[in-house]
Length: 203
View (cartoon, rainbow, N blue to C red):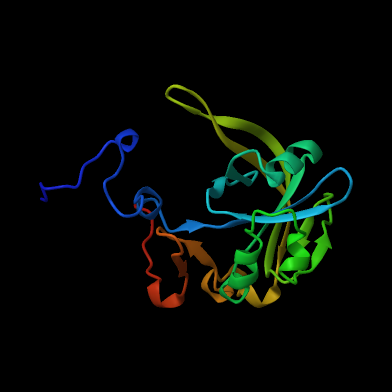
C-alpha cells in the first residue's frame, strides 16, 4: 500500500504544472452538441463534461462552463443533438471548439443534417448521432453558492447509427474510432480493440 501521496485542497491550488483533476477523471467521452437558435442559426460545440445517465429512457447530459450558445439554444428550443467524435473527425471537432462568433459547421466543413424528430442539426459526417429533448437544466451548485457552469439533460428520442458499426446485431464500439478527452492542454485518446478486455458482472 502506498503512503506518500501528492495531497492538496483544490481551493488552495494543486502545486503542479497543470491541473490534474480532468486527467484523473478521464479520459472522458466528448459530447459534440448540435443546436440551433429560434432564428434557425446552427451551432456546434464539443463538451468533455458529458455522459449517459440512464438506460430506459436513455438520458444524456452535458455541462458548459459559462452560459454558452449550446446551453442557451438547447434551453430555448428544448432540443439538441449528440454526435460521436471520431479519430477521422478529430480536426474538425477541434475547430468547432473555437469560441468566436462563427458558423462552426462552415468553419469545420461539416454538413448540418436536420433532425428527424427535433429542430436541431446533427453532423452528417458522424457515424452516430442522437436526437435529444431537454428534460432538465440547471446551474451546478458549489459549497458556497451557485456556479457559472450549466448542466443540460436530454432524453434520447432518435438514434442514427452507420450500419458499418453493427456486427451480428451488436454495436461495435471500437470500429467507430471514438476519441476521448484526456488531461493536459491537448491530450486525447482513441478507443481501439487492442485495449479491449472482457469482464462480466458477478452474479
